[in-house]
Amino acid sequence: MELAQRNYQRSRLCAADPSGAPTRRLRLSGGPGESQIESDRRLIAERIVRIKAELEKVKRTRSLGRQARRQGAVPVVALVGYTNAGNPLCSTG
Image 1 (cartoon, one colour):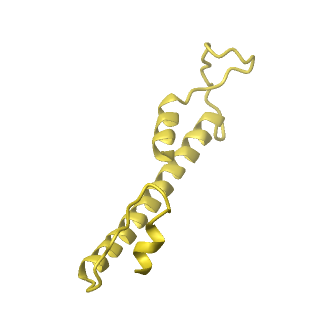
Image 2 (tube, rainbow, N blue to C red):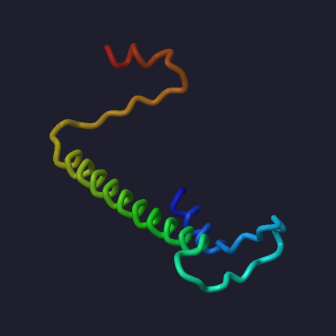
Image 3 (tube, helix red, strand yellow):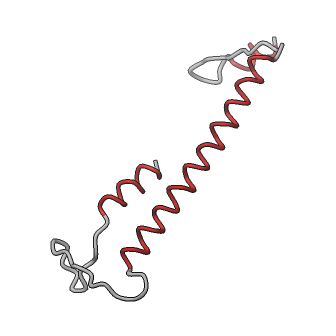
């Protein structure tokens, strides 16, 4: 979810107007140092890279768990019910 938000933000990023008018866009004049829009772009790009790395870690962890469940000799059982009314009776019996 956050990855999609950051990608959307990155594509919509524009320079803010000091007067606060939302429809007007400013052209930033070049000068020394990093402008606000450049630093915002850099921060969003860094966050996107961090999120993608976290997603890869989660994918690896889930894949390992899936493999372990497939190779395990213990059968997997699921109890399904609408309420807790009969479930304890089934699991203890």
